[in-house]
Structure formats: C-alpha cells, structure tokens
Amino acid sequence: MIDLEKVEKLREKTGVSYEDAKEALEHSGGSLLDAIIYLEKQGKVNTPPGGGFYSDADNSGSTQDDDHHNHQNESFEDTVRQCCEYLSDLLDKCIDEVKRAFR
Image (cartoon, rainbow, N blue to C red; front, side):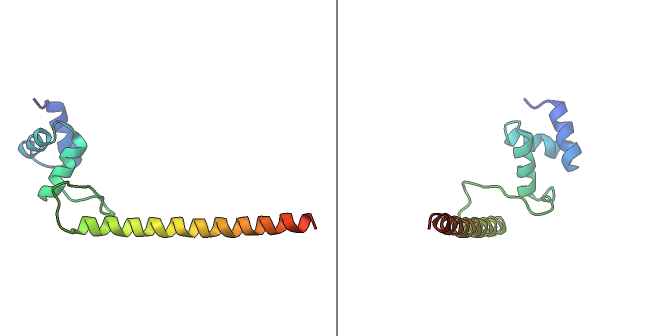
C-alpha cells in the first residue's frame, strides 16, 4: 500500500495528478526515484536538464537515451586515454631525470 506522504512528495517533485503519482509509486514498489523514471518514460514529466539516463532491461533497440549514454562513455574513455597519456609522459620525464642524476 502506498502512503499519502509519498504521493504528495512525488506530486511536489513532478507536478502530476494524485492518480498518476499513485500509479507510478505502485508500479515502482514505492520507490520515488523509480516512480519519477516511470513517469518520464510515460511522457508525463520532462527529463531533467542535461537529459539523464536510465536503463531498461526490456529495451531491445537503440534509443536517444542509449545514444546519450554511449556519447558519455566515449567522452569518459577519451578522458581516461588522455590521462593515461599524460601520466605516461610524466613517468618518462621522471625516468629521464633519474637517469641524468645518476650519470
């Protein structure tokens, strides 16, 4: 059973009707976050600025959210690659300095 307090809180955060809030909470097992995601998937609330990302195990095709997530992964991979290159260069310089010190 879903309590009125959670329904009110979900309504405050999303602006949906009591009925939609109650349905979303029941569908999500009482989890506010899952209820918000459910409402986003239903098109009853706007996604947050910057998109947001969620995963759906039943999702079999590429969606805009998947594309957004893939872009984030590529950006993260690029950042990690750049960090590794920087650290590799730094390590090479340190090794060169140690070699010079012991000549």
